[in-house]
Image (cartoon, rainbow, N blue to C red; front, side):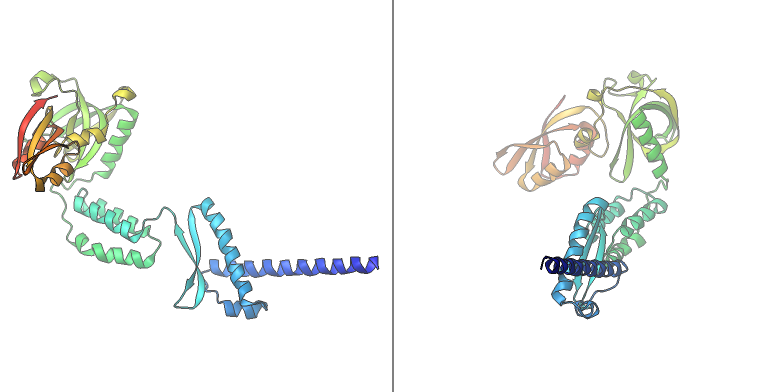
Length: 335
């Protein structure tokens, strides 16, 4: 009797092993074909493996569970989806860091509107961005949506290649290396030589700008504000020649130049003295002031107008205000 029971248990164990082996073989077969881009049909798999369709459904769920764990390790998003058109299941693979069609459209629109680079540099960037989209339909749509803008893209008048120059300058900023440049002035087109401490690169209104502190120059002679503690602004396309020097400078972290803070206070990349201004504006102009002057705040309302204050560098904001109606500076003082 004992021998019979042991024999039955052994048969049961072997049957379980066979069932487990069959399931493993079935799942691996389905997964392998999904990876090859093939469509899996439940009815066909049910007949092929001689199991119920709900068993195939459980196999697909097991594969998806495995993929979910694998996704977090590889950075890929792999999902088994039901394709209504074909009536079967297929595997979709996307990169987690890929941009969606709508994200790509927004980024490409901003780049093209900036006109910041020549076609030779701008178009390869646009195409590379679009090619990161894993959805072929969305990729095709983005190309269609921006096709007209690319066709009519107009380069800026300087026609300068800038990518390599920007990369070199950022390297000098990071290493805190002195640079020597020959810079073309805007007023008389004269080339001037400068020894600089580069501290930042910014973009505004079509152009890239280098912010840097000038060395070895008589500020009393060359500047209207010789005690200005803020860096000077240079348009990168006007830098004719530059050399990165071995000599380093040191700016303590607490005294570092912060592009974001500087950007909030400068308009059209015009320097000048740092000022605190009060502005009187009509209600319909409040949004424009808050958007144009990030440091602006509403102080109070006076009748149909608003009184606002902001901290800005003088020349740029004055130029902007001159072109605006229903806006006036009612007070300004040097900080």
